Length: 409
Ligand code: KG4
Ligand code: ZN
Image (cartoon, rainbow, N blue to C red):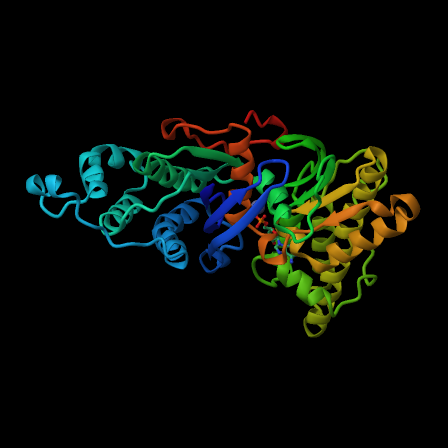
């Protein structure tokens, strides 16, 4: 089945087109297009994502991103006139155009809070033939409410016009399911343990089967990606912090500062990263007057901070693999792009589980698919569809605090 997937939960406007086949037993995917339009430039000056600006940018970008996706797949065809009979009454109007014209007010109603997007979509759709899809997958949460709604209303309008079902997708589930796009991905992926590390979440999740997830522990305060972003901001390194810290940390001494590893020895799977961020802040303030050595200091602080964060993630993960005896360990979310996290996790798992447990397989997302994208939404959408999760366009809603263990779809 051919799926159009849309992602607007935060600051990336992303659309992907995928062909899914094989069912839950042996799913296969053919990637037809994957376009991500990043808003980093817009949010950079604020040092974080500003929700109403994210919404404004999604309104601007959704139609150009859709157009690019369709061009890439050669699905973009200029509209053709309707059959002769129709054209006697409405010359040169195709069936698609008639549908738009007849439902103009309904469409306007869908975009009551996104008038700019409505105009852009209207001008686009009257020019081209409706492309053929079997369903539209859309992220409904968790995420920033105004950002989520923009994508949802876009998806609702397309679902209504194309007369195809909407598949609601959980953003964190998408970060898990993107691993299914790995070459040599497990034929028997469950039971699995997943470490989800992003700008909004830090969770250890057990997966029993498709869409059956249980959070066994999560952060009590900041998410690990948020800590990377905040530390980069306070060290005046720029935004988003994760990739910048990773880059400069390569040149730093990770043992220069002995930052705390919060909750590392506690017998649970909870995390806390706000104290670690504050420890970096104190250390930075102590040395802030030393103008000349600031850069070297920052590099060492970045490396020491990264190491502290990675150590906690590794320790808790190894403990969870041990307790729950899973054979598949998956990582997901933007922070999983980090090479230090990848190598340290791999090393620790290999070291801890030598012998018969060597069979434990670790999967990281393709580096370009670790951060937000719509391919992951398309894959999650395929699984949801197979599980019968489809909704009518009228019933789609944003769920900003959606939790993966509360998936009722
Ligand atoms: O999954 P994602 O794209 O968006 C959310 O769902 O939050 O994750 C974004 C987060 C940001 O905090 C960003 O700084 C972090 O992922 N990130 C990284 C790296 N690349 C992105 N953190 C550490 N190292 C990286 N290479
Ligand atoms: Zn994400």
